[in-house]
Length: 524
Image 1: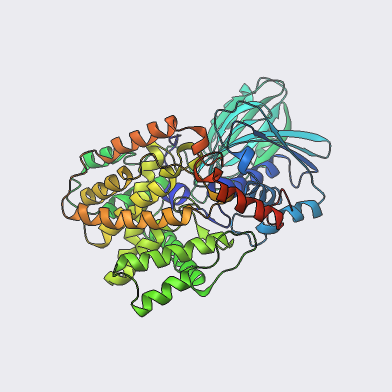
Image 2: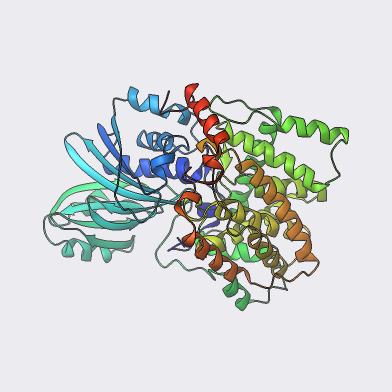
């Protein structure tokens, strides 16, 4: 599902900072849970959660972290909270009565959350989508259609009349960005702004019967009159010759406009993310453990053979494989990661970029610029297609990550914007049609291998782009094909654990062993 508002590098592509196996499950669900908590005015007394049998969540909500994240969000936690693995027990300790129902609902989007909450005798209903990479969209409140992304302070007003008088007064205010009147009996006036509508203002409005406030959950806010210089690679190239200048300069122009930020502020946010990348590699190489995990620690074996010279000479690529593995092990142990662009593909771009930056002797600014170049490729993906494996299979996750990594490598080698776009196009073409079929319904394998393959893909494509190999198909058109293939892909091949490697005898045996050992929440 292409983005309907301008993506942000820090909202949509290199983020969120999180724990958990899957950004579209365990990070997006935290944000949805937080908004639902706000809607009912605090910790709910009772919650009914409904998942569609025809969607992905019916089969993956437990093992891929949707329940964990949603419970944490209902408690008001952030996506990187260390308590998240224990959120189910914490919800019970808080006295929240939970009911999860799987029903045939015919929801158009595979990642649809239907929540009904009760607090102090009042009922509140929210329907939200996880759209990929931790991003969300609230599409209904109490049955009334809305379009909310978590990028505003939202004040929801129930009114006893048609809402037009209240809406007119609020629209006239300079501190209000958008006002929408929706629903019937009662009518709701939904106000989006940088801050909640002040109490003094509410007191002057007619026919208000109830006020609810939803705090923003995204790091980069939207604002009235938001404009970006371009949304697609082709548009960017029309503005300036891509053979002149670096992709990172275009990325800076874009994110400064999108977030209303200075260049230094963009660099500073990127610097914080770089620190998390580096910390993740160090943590992974030091060793990680976690009970509900299929694969044991493996990166130390690769590190030992690499140091002893017992591996085929892969240069930068061998170091990238080491770093990718280390980061994937941190993800699988519930450590802090950055969804870049998703948790399932969190290692391809960071591991490859860090390895290349170290071997090439890049300074900090060069490394930050490489990250921003990758981020802009991700913006182009989000604008025309999707990162969500539930929408487009693994081509959506590790495919996008490989394209991002390829552009980052070109930047590190001093290439121009045209070469970076070429590398990204090559890399994405190489994985079109790649399905998502997690073994034992967990985001570990074949995810690790595909992150490593993504690093190899990026490495090769960056080199051939620098050598002038012609991708033939421009990136925008590759992304259109990417979206079309996603729409044509069988549901069973899009992260539902109903096809591919997910249904092999080996996968089912591992899943049974994990559940039998108490690692699976539905069994344990």
